[in-house]
Image (tube, rainbow, N blue to C red; front, side, top):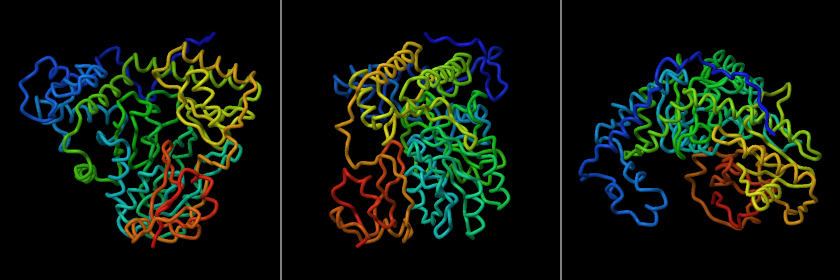
Length: 483
């Protein structure tokens, strides 16, 4: 059975919500909207759910449709420019995360990355970026016309995963390249590997270049000292957080933080967001961001996060004792977010292990690679679920599972060194043709191919297609190349 200590896991910040109520102004405004309905002659056209397919309405519930409204109505405030409860909710989020300004994002962290690219990476300027960045960062450079200078993180060969970004590689790239608009790194990796952001930030300040950190998978860090320290407090100029990934908000909702002393102009950020965000923002999504922040600051939320950390430690300890089961752990070279548990089992590919967990144990994992599976120990997981997960691996380690159905030349995690021969924007907008994959070797890619999760690009526009790409492209019969 699971046994936990009574040790208190404290927040990075010294907050005490026992003496004051945690405010959630957007949640309160939406509740008031629900309790005081008005006759609607405005969008959305389903009019409080009256024009919705009955089966769908029954599936998600009548209240969800009643609450599905947008800004500008019923004293809910506006998103751009931020007014009313929306403005107050963003200000409370900035306080909670320790930012100068925080913006709510309704297109995931993708919108934040596109905004940052448009603000700082102009046409012809160089951006130092890690090869395992999310495709939205590449998309931002396609829009801006910037020239990517690719940094290869360390490779964890045994795990077939990207590891930490070496600060020395950032400094070397800055020494070798003029006109660098910014350094843009991903931290943590999808699997929870943490780089030395503090040292990277020091180097960036030395060369007077802003640092952006795509911290999409690290939004919990500011709320417990037993997790890595957020880049918001380590010298980054801007940080993106996907609250919907691990923070408890609804899918598609994220936050963009501009740090104190940042080289970014928050007003310019807001003007750029106006170009990219919807003009009909969902109050449900924004209220879920407000609620997620309030929950993480509350006694209940802190307890949930503390429990998740203890659960993660328990799972790691138990799995490491099983024969043939291996768990990725931090080393002297890199730190780790322990709530992301990457597991491999001798004799099984990650895809086969994923199917066993799903079919035989009714367990769905975050993702599977060539080698193993990624488990997220979330703030919403329950004690009995954790015990069931451990029991499942105990059974798998004793069983004689076959991997016959997964013997194929197929790779799932791109571990390639790109050969860029054309600017991504120029390649994307060039004349193209679609040809059979077998004929594409030696041609220049005109498209982005990136499988989600984790959204790391297999092929970039402007990248030379080589034979090494083929194992990652088994599901593609044709490729789009420069004519």
